[in-house]
Length: 629
Image (cartoon, rainbow, N blue to C red):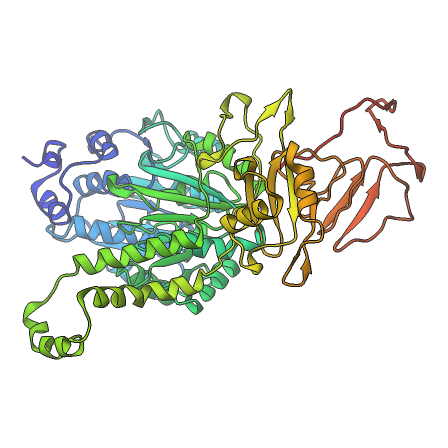
């Protein structure tokens, strides 16, 4: 016997949902349907997106309503047009074997006159967005005086979008004795208040822990420099050849710009945002559902209600302003029990947000590395090999062309043919990723001491320590990827010129026109001496102690990227400003490439080097303050 029949759903509905692929109820359906079928309780259901909430309330509604009568008996409110259309479509599919079922979708961006005509013809279930529904109520074009059930779907998002007053106005037109069913992915205080206001002793059902994420989703984050964000994003996409994903941006303009850039770069992508007409939105969604789009670039609001199967990745190009929106974003993948990946591309300052999200969803993020150009090329090559190996051959159709194909290839060996087919795709990526720079930002996260292992992320050697001091010094060299160096090349170049062992070289961070590398403290002099008088292609090679890094000390070295230097001296070169503990003040500070120099002074004079504590007393023995990223 079908499990849905055992839950109390009748045969004609079960037959319809069986054709849709419903075999076993999801946990929220299994727990909520028997309760809702009684029709005697207000209800609060908390479950993540993609767990089958539409069927959880839709199937009981079809059982409880009287479809011999053509007046509104159920009102379903949801935040977006897409979700409104999805729920309407699902209810029509569930009830296709039932006579006289009329469901009307009421939403903005479509003809209101068409919606009014459908309401006038007779309707039992109205699925609506709050704004358009209130417009129709104000026109006195609908009567909710006999409504038996009100469903608030994605209640948290409706409140986030500012629909509180609209919902109050709409519900004031419904009878007091109605039953209210509230479904939400999270339970913030606002949702709790609306439940208290409109419900009487509701039956509350929570699947999993409140506000947590889907257990089948793997959460990853990549740390990059802001200027490298788009390049890093493309590299992540290229490293996942079979990606079918949704990319979330913070603004409409950003979605449009990213989509246009991807299209120019040859990707199957398009944008979905609030400025599109309903016709444009429908066209984009049809292409995405048909999988003729590989990447859908969307805002939070536009993406609500997107119910597309087999989304492999959700990419947070920008983290959401409201942390709870992360749960809704990531819920677009791993639907119906499948697995998925949620990726966040961040800068070092956003690590705190990642930790906050971890607390909200109750799951740890994995710190991942932006793949190298070689990694991407290799992944793409074997994806092509796999595709060729598994392609279905239409023997009947291809047979007529086989003699000509064989004639064309007769001078080539089997190995030559394989190499040429593989090179069709391989050469494109090989050229694009030739000398591709490392896009990972060197940012150290401040983690609890007990979580810090002896080895860094991805097995990199952690700096050895001795009495609290680093045994490695971070050095700057004015050679980088534009000079056709990768990490291996630079390691060899350093060792050849200094005669030090590669084992004493720590992390190497290759940038565009410069690089950083760590060497054991004992070898710093050897490196400095070894590069004296050395030139590269007519340019003098410079080695300096860097003021930046995760393992070097900052004793007067130069700060070269984002932030500022708070050392006993040293110079700020690119953006930001220098706060120095000593030196003399010259006017308002020397201007240096997009920043300014602030030196600690006393009434405009020289401070002489010390610090003051909060009481104003000079502290000569206070250790140097350092900014951590």
